[in-house]
Image (tube, rainbow, N blue to C red):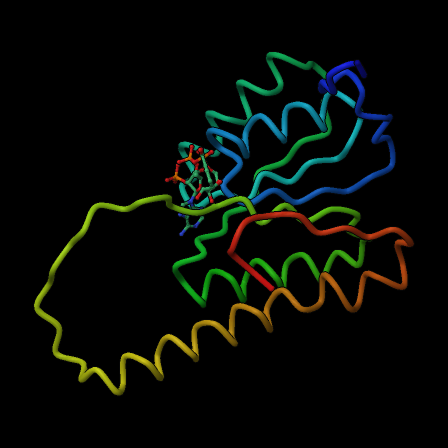
Length: 159
Ligand SMILES: NC(=O)c1ccc[n+]([C@@H]2O[C@H](COP(=O)([O-])OP(=O)(O)OC[C@H]3O[C@@H](n4cnc5c(N)ncnc54)[C@H](OP(=O)(O)O)[C@@H]3O)[C@@H](O)[C@H]2O)c1
């Protein structure tokens, strides 16, 4: 039987630049940790500064000298998505891996009074979807030329 894969099998990530959304906890944090241990430059894209800084501190305590940084990104805010994308673009650095990890699984059912008519709600959702996709489009398109082998992974969030 073949040997079971483990994080030790991850090849060197030296020279790779990685963005992980929702990297302050859970799967995102552990992906950041494992990739940073292998030498990647990891950007922890988190919505809450305090939780992000705490994750950054945990990670650098685990791996002193790790190339990690915090960038604020709240995926529920289009202004935040745009600002994050603009800041990343302005750096004109290659991106080798985008891990669209942030998300909420099985949120509790919540009913709220809503003053927006159902037809407009559909339009809002469509607008959100396309704006979010557009904000991330640079990752796939602009960086693809700069970084052969660009790869994106993640659950439903993002294109
Ligand atoms: N664990 C599972 O069994 C499982 C199964 C299937 C899919 N998934 C998916 O895998 C991903 C990670 O799961 P997990 O178990 O590691 O969850 P988790 O520990 O709850 O982590 C989710 C992360 O996403 C962040 N996040 C949520 N909404 C955000 C927003 N609007 N903007 C930016 N960041 C946001 C959270 O930030 P805060 O700390 O600030 O809330 C947190 O860092 C999720 O997308 C989840 O749906 C998980």
